[in-house]
Image (cartoon, rainbow, N blue to C red; front, side, top):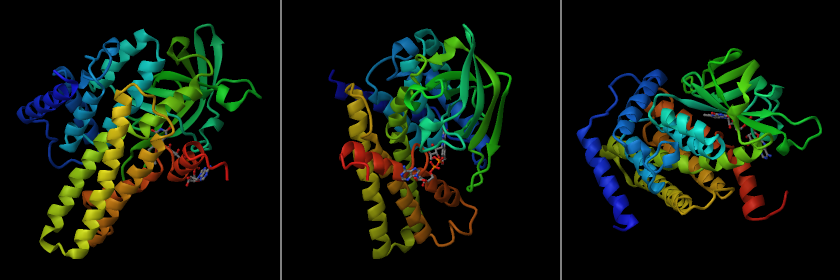
Length: 376
Ligand SMILES: Cc1cc2nc3c(=O)[nH]c(=O)nc-3n(C[C@H](O)[C@H](O)[C@H](O)COP(=O)(O)OP(=O)(O)OC[C@H]3O[C@@H](n4cnc5c(N)ncnc54)[C@H](O)[C@@H]3O)c2cc1C
């Protein structure tokens, strides 16, 4: 059987399984707590049935097969609104990093916990003074004994930390004067270690999605280092392309579902002006999906993702914000006055040009590293 036929058959079997096994979220509760419960429920069922394991290496508890299989699972699950795109995307951001950088035994032990929904993990990169300029981070790790490091500092905007069991954490380990990019070391830290405090932050859309995380003299075993001392910057450079591209595949499916819902809602009053707006939103989404598909295929082909994923990130932010701008224009009051999902989603869409690296920083990367336009 050709790979194409295998992939098509995989999708139709998955669709049939999802039709048979009702994983629809219980109605009514749109809180983050409810989303988290649903996320674990859906992953557990998909993992037990094998679906969540396809496309991941057998060495980490997967069933192997082309990586495109896991993109199909994400697309079908999130496109049907069985899970939210935010929590689901963490799988695509953090799992490849743990597989590439953790000791093989650690990856084999931990990855199944994430894919099966038993655990949630978070990403501790940003700090109050270090977001776009990530290399300036100051959370410090020092070696206390042969097998122990001690971490002190603060992270911020750490999504889902209040639910997370573990954190992929960037720390500074280099002596003063060491170049920034050689001074950063990553650890995989258990969040129930004494000395860690997690404080959720309220966002403008009313959801405590992210947190401040404080580390006060936190002991981390040396075998939880990801890679070697000084590999943290390279780890970040390898992780961010996933956060700027492949983790959006299922988000795109979700955005299509919201465009369909908008069309249903305004159908009765559609005039030529609305047609043009909806058409523009569709084109932006379609452009994004084409770009994202090409990225998925490059990854599946064994190519390394890099600065080119900044294009995916710019297209995602643009398409998402355009869609919700049109919601605001076509459903007067739904965003400004009503307590509807549209309002929450409109507000959250503003974050699309911030998380994973701001739109300005992505455009800098595109102009400097892809177009070679120089520093100014
Ligand atoms: C919803 C959401 C979830 C997040 N989740 C996480 C998470 O789980 N883990 C994590 O570590 N972080 C997370 N973040 C943080 C995110 O990575 C940072 O917000 C982002 O990198 C920007 O950093 P900053 O907020 O410090 O802004 P700053 O870096 O202070 O930037 C402020 C402004 O200055 C502009 N700017 C900065 N430098 C330049 C430059 N060189 N050229 C042009 N303009 C520039 C930026 O574009 C921006 O408009 C999340 C953020 C959001 C919004």
